[in-house]
Length: 286
Image 1: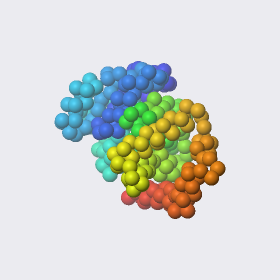
Image 2: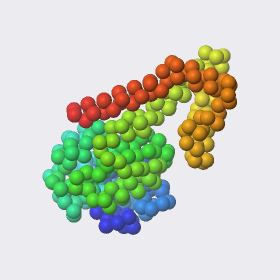
Image 3: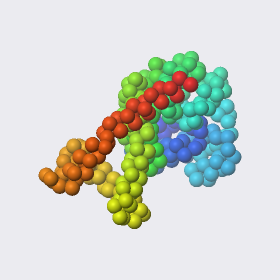
Image 4: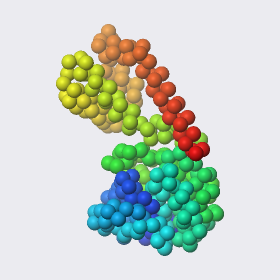
């Protein structure tokens, strides 16, 4: 493993799983200007993916080396586990005994992006003493605007955790959390893009009921969500300040918010997050 954040230019990164999220992580790191990912290029990566057509695409698009099976990788400093949770344990079982993935301080740093799989469960399937950092990214990572939560496993050092946090910061925002918070993080930011999209859909449909063309209503809703997020980001306004600034005493916005609250807007959001947390915990036990 690279000894520090300035050694990434010499790192060998094995990406196990070349799907959309894996591609977004690799492509984002290769395109980054900031350290530590800014030192990475195609020569740093090898991608393991079973689909021949997908491998050909990744080789042509990014110039990276590709193999059909993770067992073909002979050396790695960082191993990004970017396969679906339901196949993760089988993948780990197939590589756990191989020299390229040996545990301990001299072995690679494993980075999981799989939802629902705890560090303890992953650690049990990895070689003894393997250093592991678990992450919970969301789909806006695909466009460099992701939110990623980072959790260190029992054998991971502070430098390991900071390296992973810094790498994912090149793809948006990344923060270190305790693992007992990870299900709530997943319920909020991991699933959050679906909630935002559902809100845009609801605004579209409500706009259509009020007489707008549905396509126009969806465009207006989308641009309003995007513009509000940009306003908050650029001005540093919190959510309450942003909301209050739009509300005139006795005006239509206050009337709308009062009606939404009466219909159960905030309780519905709370119920949704609680349901997502419960389901995440259930999936983690499967």
